[in-house]
Length: 82
Image (cartoon, rainbow, N blue to C red):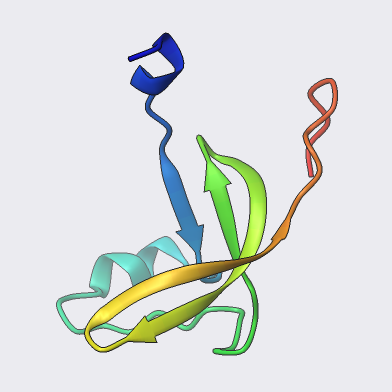
């Protein structure tokens, strides 16, 4: 096993975002729904260690949920944000 095989990367998939006032967030309980700024047909953002690396579509097969990569984003150059 090489050193690169031992690396761990945190992968996150962002379905959407929302701005919620703190007082409303504190009132939320189990079953609360937070509306996102996206629809079911919008691409999701795929992050590797909090850096956007790709876009994709959510796929559901039987009881499994996954993400199909539809576009790889260009590498971040010299610390520029995307």
